[in-house]
Amino acid sequence: MLDLKRADFGPGFVFGAATSAYQIEGGQADGRGPSIWDSFAATPGNTAGGDTGVTACDHYHRWREDLDLVRDGGFDAYRFSFAWPRLVPDGTGAVNEKGVAFYDRLIDGMLERGLRPFGTLYHWDLPSALQDRGGWLSRDIAGWFAEYAALVGRRFGDRLASTATVNEPWCVSVLSHLFGKHAPGLRDLRAAARAMHHVLLAHGEGIRALRAEGVGNLGIVINLEKSEPATPAPGDVAAARMWDGTFNRWFLGGALKGEYPRDVTDLLAPYLPEDWERDMDTVGRPLDWCGINYYTRTLMRHDPQGGILRSARAEPRLETTDLGWEIFPEGLTELLVRVAREYTSLPLYVTENGMAERPGLDDTRRVRFHADHLRAVLAAKAKGADVRGYFAWSLLDNFEWAEGYAKRFGLVEVDFETLERRPRASYRAFAAMLGGVVAAPTSRGTK
Image 1: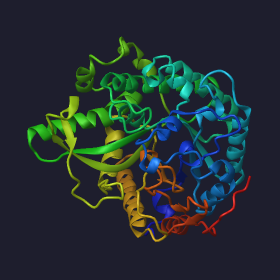
Image 2: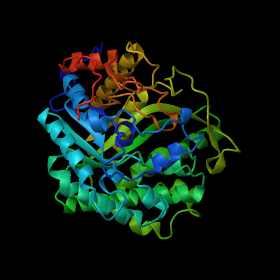
Image 3: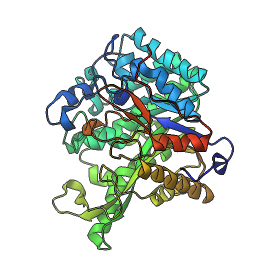
């Protein structure tokens, strides 16, 4: 069990569970348009086992039982994302009212269960029609995103407890455009540099559009890794510094201070959009909070063949998750304190934290993982970080992007043959700590 109490975190601290649209919804009907993840997953070799998100967890039909799981686990809030192609199939222009109706039902369902809706506008499922027009390589995406943000603000903003623009801009830009691991699967430095800027420009324009619609409590969700050198050798130290620059400092500095780190802009100068400096007031528009996603530490070593960063990941030294990621809760404390001291006095939320584990209901290691990271949050609060909430990733086993259905993050196990939901020990541990009740496994969807 989790050897902690809700009261340890102070009054008003928010406990939640998190998901994302493409990973759980399925429901590719009722006017939903195609996304870049549909085509990426349909391309042989891009995902483990050729898995796709066509059905996923069928949350589109089973959302009632999934919200019951959040409520019965004792959680205060549910973090979810809107599917841009479900709401605006072509990315701009005509609105799909059936998609609007789905999110109306979902949000109202949260409120009926006493859950606070934490919405995210973009969790990687770009409408394919916008990719055809340049996607994140095009500066025009800032306007497209602002139009979409305004729609979400008009239709749902009055019922959202909190709204984030973009989830994990590093994954949107670098992982997807330089390393080719996620959709659209590019391996192009110029594309990555442009996406790194345009994703934050779109974020800033999204904030402007949401505020114009009267929506408050706005933020962004940034994924951070603890980057350390594999050895004290100067080359390894430089490699860790540059990894920290492109992974952490670029997005923290841009979104929270309206400035990029000089060492990274010097490195990327030939590839960045022209006159990017003129956009920094928009990139750094004032926010109300910042979300931090944290999973692991990375040890970096110098590698002359390691591309422009001249670096490569070294082998982990600690216990790892089923994805091979180091389990390093101290890194969460260090990063939360660093953000609070170096970047912002805004409230912080741990918007994702969790581990991939082998299938099964007795996930003892996952219970320990969450307990250790919750203690890391308490340690950060004791050092002055204004941490207001913690969201476990994920409520359900899901389509884990390029890993398909092979890697399991869920507090609740999903049988992808029957779609039955079965609460794991980690779910039961949260329920015990938060005063929830453990729901019986379910197997029938409710439409």
